[in-house]
Length: 115
Length: 112
Image 1 (cartoon, rainbow over the protein chains, first blue to last red):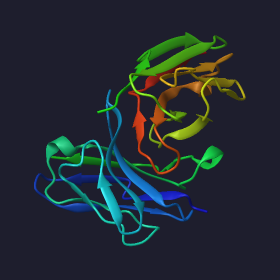
Image 2: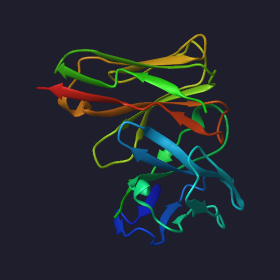
Image 3: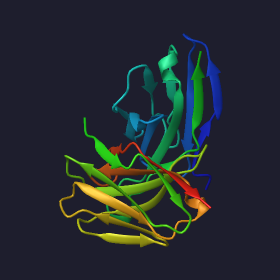
């Protein structure tokens, strides 16, 4: 298994540009989520999905859209990038359930700079 | 929103020393997780705790789920240089598909 993969690894955008951050997992996990990590802020949840066709907002959803057309993919879209969206973005997935199988796997991250 | 208070924010220790960090919350969590993040990488799960009072070890790491369900701590014994990184606690209110709430992290530096 490749686990959770993210592309691109690095990206520089100009203010107002749009782009999509890709995330895929090959573990057949139902639950996927997007976080942003800023210095001193830890990880903050942007959007999450409990299954194909179902998405919901996290703590900091403004400026971001998501969709979940398949179990494997969970892209994050920035429609009009702003400097405040400069951050490191992590995608994560886990299998819903109880007990010791509840672990969340993180991708390697996308480092985004908005000028 | 829910918040986790993680302390200390940073630690500078000598190789061989023991380390202790903790997380507290005003909310009850059913699951506590501890992650480590190396520079340029995503967080990696170290220990997961599922029951109040549970004490779990993973090599030199030991974590406990507080009896009140509002706190957890992580101990690292006999630290080594590769322990350097940022450690995050995370709480989950229900198993599986519920959202994780993260602490702001403890940055650990180990001097050889």
